Length: 185
Image 1 (tube, one colour):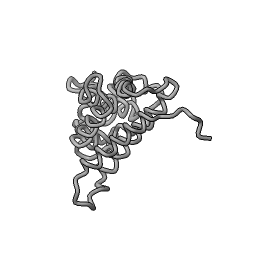
Image 2 (cartoon, rainbow, N blue to C red):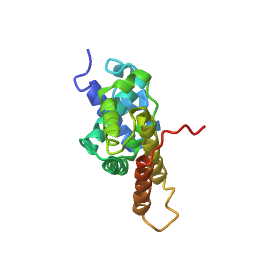
Image 3 (cartoon, helix red, strand yellow):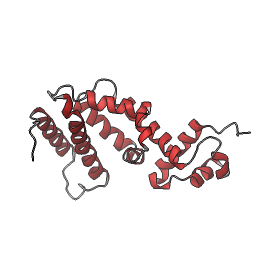
């Protein structure tokens, strides 16, 4: 019989705490079992395997992030909310870029984030056929900046990163407003 204090949700919350304390690479079934005070075998009554645990953790992060972003954001609102979340929860933010199984992409939390990102591009006159490319471009720009910032790659300068962040978002806005569908080849 499963222990009363163990459930998939409780283990997901404990995994988030573990990640906050020790980073995403520390997440393992044995580390989680130690954290909740049980044998690793006890976890498998609630979580299929480490991949399923990672998926549950990532879904929880996507849900938190979507709640931070809110409804119908502009691209700048979306980017600023992501930056706020990345500063507040750097280890959880790192979980976003972890690979997921293809069937996990349709999870409600991932679908919600995807819809928010696509919706943030509504202000731009992009043909539907270009949406996936624009989403990838915007996501890579935002995530790349945040990855460099969180790795203290800009710490060698005294200036705050806020001006650079705003310049990057202005450039992203200009690029999306002038998006072309001409084939570059």
